[in-house]
Length: 483
Image (cartoon, rainbow, N blue to C red; front, side, top):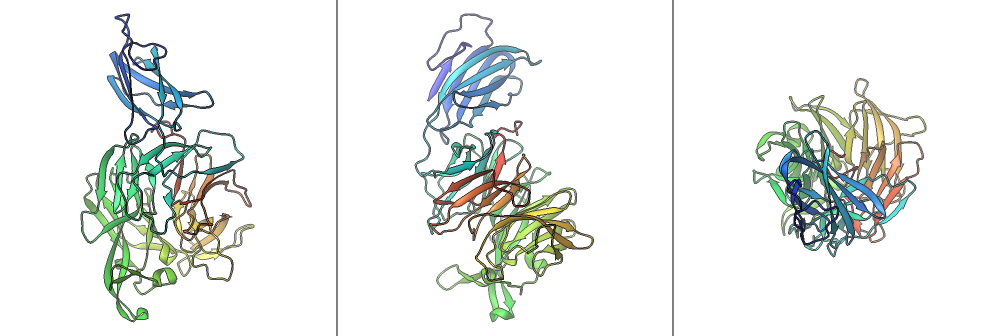
């Protein structure tokens, strides 16, 4: 789809119009649907003198959206999104000079395309007004094979009504792949997990870069974060033969690494669980269940790392090890494990006010605030007492001097999520809980937003009956500068 206009008319719905005044600032406008996302308008606007261009996106019944101003220049190429499928929008381009004075306004009508055929449908429940927030995530099919389809979205963003307003067309991945995640990066690109690593994409779905392990014996998995250096930290897995008396002698054991890469993908630092943890500790069924690698080859998934967090002020890492039911804090300079949080770890567990304390089990997605509150998603797979299984988000106030962990908040979700899941604080100071789900047809993937208060009721929830959800991230905008 191409819309071209040579004059700064108030509205141009296709075709072209000749300029009637040599003093007009806008000399041409080209608007096209992005090939990899039909909800994205790719715009190229040229001006006779150096200008900046702001864009306002309007629809008769939906919230107005703003696109940040472009850099000062003569040619302005940018993407416009946050629009629903098969809908007509007005894109108003506001052309300003260097001082911010409006020189001209130009409007185009843009009609979005349809969604990929396998895009899941969501149901939403809400008791809050639409604040314009968007949720980024990567729902995966429940099919036990976990196989990806080329006619589905690998990642997407939904609005408060659960309507898709951006997606990333699957770039050809067909292997089993449930831990799908997408993060908006500081430079405006999106980091999207794919099997064996991650890709960086533009909003239009164009690949900026691909990152895979430069070493054959390591494979990247589950997480990637940006570092202040401009590089990345990720998790990597590796298997080796280890003598484990409790398992009958030498067995194949899979452990985890934290890997730092520079912007070019070269490894610049690494840390290994094999060098710092007890390789004979197999605390429950998840670590003791051998996985088949081939006809006659098995491996024990000893640690199953699923999240890494960099603590810049302390130059330390948090590492979540699901099959150990531990979160580690690691000093980056020495590699020393400063503490292990969880059952049989280094902290004494204490009850909080109105919060009977219990440890987490088989967890995902920890975060640590500057005032020492650690929050995570407690899947509960290996909870030791005889109760109905349940999953929850939980917060502990850590005292790293006296080594106590006081449970100060928890929220049990209404589904049992035996894999995947996450919890993050929203810009509105609530918690966004992704109850990943399980392969059971009766258990949906679910995301809830809930206040950090005792016995709080969710203010918003989204359910995918036929999908599972690894993580969910709330953003106020997909444009860097509008967050």
